[in-house]
Amino acid sequence: MDAVHISSSSNPRYKHARALQRKRGRLQHHQVLLEGVRLIEDSISAGYPPALLFVDPAKANEMAPLLGRARLAGVQTFSLEPALLALLSETVTPQGVIAVSPLPAIKPGSNGLSVILDGLRDPGNLGTLLRSASAAAVDQVIVLPGVTDPWAPKVLRAGMGAHYRLAIRAAQRLQQVDAWVGNARPYQADARGAKLYTEIDWTLPAVLVIGGETASRRATSGWRDVQKISIPMANEVESLNAAMAAGIILFEAVRQRTRK
Image 1 (spheres, one colour):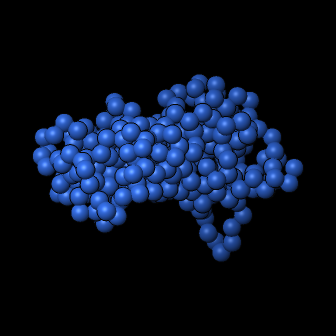
Image 2 (cartoon, helix red, strand yellow; image 1 turned 135 degrees about the vertical axis):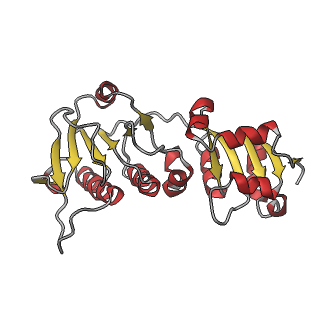
Image 3 (cartoon, one colour; image 1 turned 120 degrees about the vertical axis):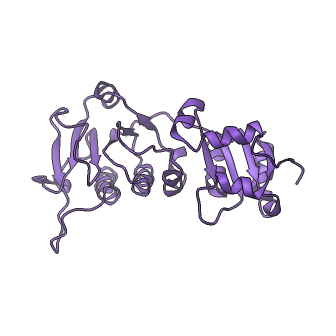
């Protein structure tokens, strides 16, 4: 592996990568840490090649295909001391490769289906939900204040590349949401909803509001005339987690739109 070796934690490139472990650093630099071959390859395929790539020298041979692809994309590659790489890693068994990548700026689609997230705090749940939204060809996922950072490491891993195929937008005010969703009809998943999700005409422009199971305060409370919809459940099950509920409803929308 023909790359400069970094062995000191005072190296400016390494210190920059460490700053991206915090949300504040990600927002400041508009960059994110990607760990593992799959995520890094997804970023390159989507047209957002990393600015920096750090590799454990002991794993350079098995990383050869990725390193070759990164080199063709003009990525700066560095060999990094394993102990320092471990401090950047957020996994139990690191793959030995971590990248500093730009946050993607993906334009919303035009299928007339958006998702708003309100009060969702579990990283794995959020990542899984983003993956389902991407698979269902959702135009955009709008994240309200109080929701877990969608660019946190656990969310990125659970999303499995969805972040590079889906428009993810952070809204500070509901006025922004109004501008982004237009006149689409809003529906909120709620176990107490009077209308079943299968009774909705999802071929029309729609917005699905998904909230966290334990969130006591909803940012969307009182927003527009939101119709609450439910998923029928047996065996006295009270609710589903947010990602599962969203997946069920979104793919009902896909079913209806496909038939039409």
